[in-house]
Length: 337
Image (cartoon, rainbow, N blue to C red):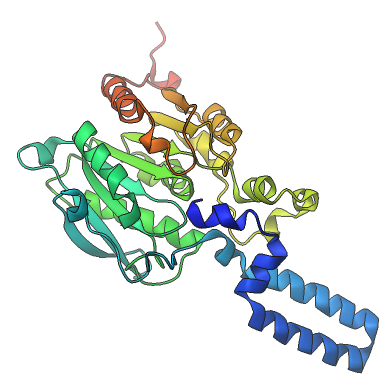
């Protein structure tokens, strides 16, 4: 969730759908009138309700993903790390389905770069990765880490169109790219996600084949699931009764986080007016990692928690503690004496 969604939460869902899909809705209304004329009111009413349901289902991508930002022309122009005095490689990598994904690899100078941790950065639902460069610069400087910034399909200069399944594949492709590099410390991969990016990071860490490649997970101001954040944002009581299958994008982080066992830091801005802070508290409580922390920053809003006092220092402290953390062996592997 990000800047665009802050304005959307003030609009009724119906108004958003009308703005995004008015051509489809006009077509459905014309068809409804035609059916009413041929078959009568009852049949036409059923068709109208079906059409409304289909429209809401098909427009859910527009409600969640906002790669277009008219003020910054974010689908045509992406600020590069040189704008914050960082060295970088400009990359285009094929995702698992062949979609071309844009990335920035910001690397520490040698000899530190090969042994430094590498942080994979998954951004929120609006704009592009260029809008997060100041935050990346702080992480690069304070944590002395390499950073791989990932631009989901349909965002910035990446090809394709965003979807839940698609952005998960893009995250996996980013990890595969790092795994293929011989100049990256494979034992120190940090996965970081803010808001929508937090859901992407949780999905990645919860997968057995990728979770084993992650050293630490950091999620910031992310939500428990799309159904719950939808109810929290729009505050329509009837939304609580919408069945799960009606949601095109679900991002059920609350059901995945119990599969995570890597050291995990949950960063929650308590002044976040988009994602209720209780969602971060619930994710923390559900997480199965034996080494987990919940960092709550009282003045942190949804988009500016990274600017809070002690933000970077707290992350550095967590990573320092994680570096000396030794997981307990599984009970089944302990010999009986």
